[in-house]
Length: 407
Image 1 (cartoon, rainbow, N blue to C red):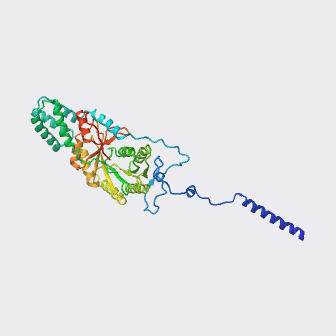
Image 2 (cartoon, rainbow, N blue to C red):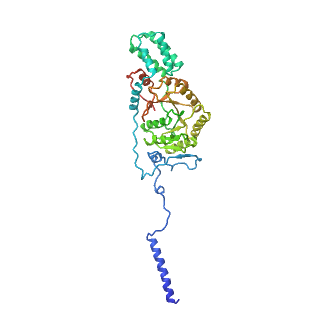
Image 3 (spheres, helix red, strand yellow):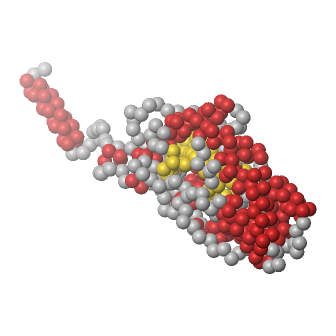
């Protein structure tokens, strides 16, 4: 190769190199590691975003990655750019809910209400009448002690005041019944946030309506402008977590859930942990239905409560009882109270098929009040229990004004 040819080759190489450099500098397809959308965002995640996307999701960015491993899974939020804005329901306000439920209760025709009204309809009450009345009270699950108290008080007062005025007799009966139901008990729900969210544990046997009660209670709290998180610690029933998440998504309440068969205590622990980090007001934990006769299952329920209390105190333990179960419900109540220190009763199905005396007897047996009642299948058919409203409904009276200073 002569000198001229050599210089031509060198020149071509130099020109080619310059073209490549210029192409890259001018914005050609060079490879580089870009930042994710999350890394490019400025400022901390907002409190609202950390809580919920309104469709049952929970933001994980704020979770402590150093926490002990758990088999709890979190329901992840969908892609906010592609997911449609959810249409949230507005739960019914407390006063209209109370008024509607009171009307429904007044329309029932229980053996207890029939027996009470038959008593005051008599012009003359003899021993046979009193015996029939006692039998009615006992078959209505009032219990021997409360029945004896009521009959003794009524016999004494009606003997003195007489039955000449049926209105006066009705007032006497109403006063004694209200005493028996005991309006002095504190029926407020302890759902006030302190340094940590209020934690409400919902327990009971299978079929009493625990998951439904949890969903309805979430609606009650949302109607009071509370920030709520649901924990699906019922990991044994196949559809329980889906059912609870559906309840929550309708009102924009997120759900922490676990894989089917996961450790319920770990799911409850994770739910409270997420609730603390998201600064919600109330965490509602739905637990699996368990037979009160199964010692292992009851011990597991105690474990759920102990694990939760590593992070925050349990503010309320609500025992859900089917009002139609009568004495069997009382047996259940005693066992649950021993294991998890029940603080309040929720009576479901308190309608025409229920024996209203269970309200009095369960309070006497446990020393804790009935705090909530469910009277139907509607989404807002859950309300605070009002002793005077309950008695007026049994007696078919409507003069008592509904007042409520609960929650």
